[in-house]
Amino acid sequence: MASKRAQGKEIKRNKVIDAAEHLFFSKGFAQTTMDDLCAQAHLSKRTLYVYFNSKDQLYFEIMIRGYKQLITMLEENQQSLPVIDRLKQMAYTVYQFSVLYPDYFTAIFSYENRAADFEKGVPDASKEECYRLGEQVFQKLTDLIEEGQNSGIFRRKPDAVQTAVILWSCLHGILNTAKVKKNYLASFHSIPSDSLIRQAFEVIIRSICIDSGGDC
Picture 1 (cartoon, rainbow, N blue to C red):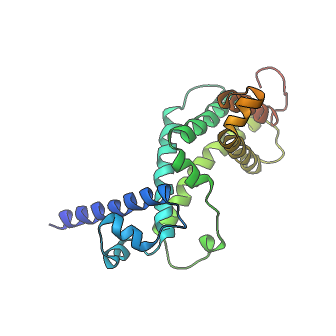
Picture 2 (cartoon, rainbow, N blue to C red):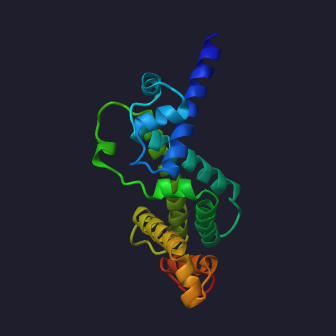
Picture 3 (spheres, rainbow, N blue to C red):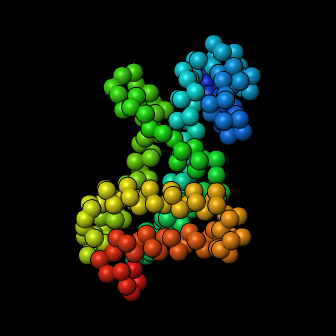
């Protein structure tokens, strides 16, 4: 009986997240109200607040879904390749994620961290899980850079963490440019987005190599 009750709660909880995902992606986070969520999920506001206390908490849940999908793709694409090729593969997998799951990509990459996210206070399991998964992705990148530094392929300065932040930021920038400037790049410069992204990956990775020639 307890198991069925727990299962019922999980179904309702996912129903609310599904409703939030639909509305945030179609209407926008700022434009969506808790009343909208109640109507979409066919639940009373009292029932809704049993599961989630705010839109922010629901946004974290949507990012959790996105991070899980990205992590699955990264792990599926893991191969026994030289570290440079694995770094390129990781970058290209993030690109594939942005194409296959554009709404999740936008949700993750457009989220603006707030000071309140890091304040000690009432525990928020959704927020903690979201940041844990985000760090899991970031750690994969940091580990690759650290491996390359230890093997004498990548520069040691800045350190692996700072280099990872820089590469992640560059990756975000080029993927965003390829998306929003797609028609302009094709019409004025005859540059397909896919080609631009692959060349950008080469330039970005070469910039951290000790020897910028050869395979790097």
